Length: 341
Image (cartoon, rainbow, N blue to C red; front, side, top):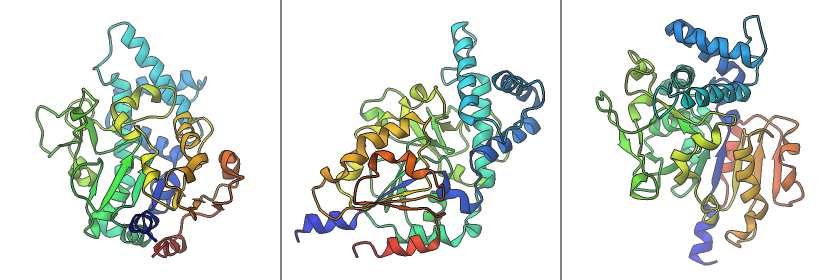
């Protein structure tokens, strides 16, 4: 076996969805929306009432909206409509969005950080998952939370969000993150590091802050009035526009398969209405064996949702695809540790 084949067979691709973080207590989307709006109401009641009234219009409700039951994507689409309307009238808060959407995104991020366990409380499954990661593994996540970064830091592994510099693990966050923002703030109490996207195709720089992975750093911050302005791509029809500042992360996604072998898709249900993620998989998974030509590659999809096979119907006929209809657990991590060692 050539050195190239041996190296590729040791490298793996992990694709993470919301179900990956669930065992750490990070809420799924319905509960997360509720928690975000409760925090919004508590800390910024005036602006909350405007957003809450938009929700009543969106869901045709004269009563209080039950945020655990409504469609998160529909709500974000309505906020996008409101922003478009204000943009047409010259009332938009900034080039980065309306007041309502920016404040909502801030409280969404804060609710996520508040629910993320401190390093000393991270469940062992995530510590073991982080330990078994290898130098040339690639992680693609559609999650906004910092659980993976905190787990890696706890065991002394370094990570990078881009292709530059040395790092033990590379994490590509296709929907942004709670600790990212566009443009360097003029007055900052934190250290913001550039992605260096403007060295390539982008005209607007993206920055990240390691300190904001820790919930204590959020104390004293406020929406619309400081440096904490999380860059997070919201679901709904606005995604096609919002995702553009991180287009380099989405560029040529087949590269993630070119030098990796086994693929694990953890806790990602592949919702039918999420056209961007669906398009990503339609573009890559059916031809997955073509990228290296090395036989024996397998795709393992771990998800407790019994309908998950329907969502991945376009690869059901492939022999190398294995569905594990279970919640992500420590036994899955043990199997990963044995892959091609």
